[in-house]
Each structure stands twice: as C-alpha cells, then as structure tokens.
Image 1 (cartoon, rainbow, N blue to C red):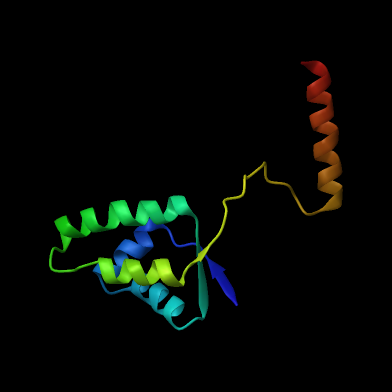
Image 2: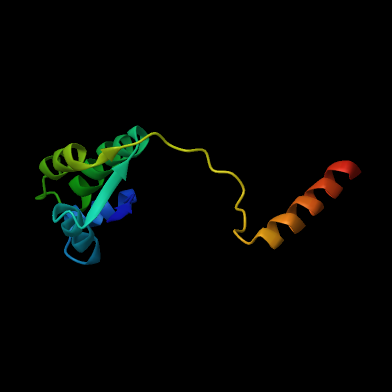
Length: 106
C-alpha cells in the first residue's frame, strides 16, 4: 500500500490535463495509492483549483472530481516537523555532542 499526499499542482494538473498527474489520480481511483489530506490541504484544493481551471481550461468543471477526492481521501491531523535526524546511531551521537557544545557556548 502506498500512502501519498498530493500537492495542489498535482490535483490541478490531473483534473485539467492529461499526463503523469492524471495517472497519479488514476492510481488513487484504483486504490493502488491511498491519498491523505489535512483540512488545510483540502481548503487549498477547493480555493485554488476551481479559480485556476476557470482561467486556464474553462470547459472543465473540477467540482465532481474535488468532491470525489474529498470523499475518498483519508483526513489526518498535520504533524509538526522537527529537524531532520540521521537514522545512523553514530551520527546521532555526533549531532548531540555538537548541539551540547553550541548550547554551552551561547
């Protein structure tokens, strides 16, 4: 199972045009990719996509596909992101030593 968060541009391109972005949406429809969203991402989809498609491809109505995405995507709470840490235990030890030295200096 592949879990994904699609950027607004992927959804926009997938709805408005053919290409790799449309294939990404098709993978979600086939349940080969599970789409995850937050409330903020859905709000961005709903505000940006209809406005942009109205200017670029006015004959395309994005509302049915956006409704489908909203009904099928799994709603999750955003997680705060911290500094990237190495999975190598030796690297983690070196990082902690450096951080401790910086902390004592300031």
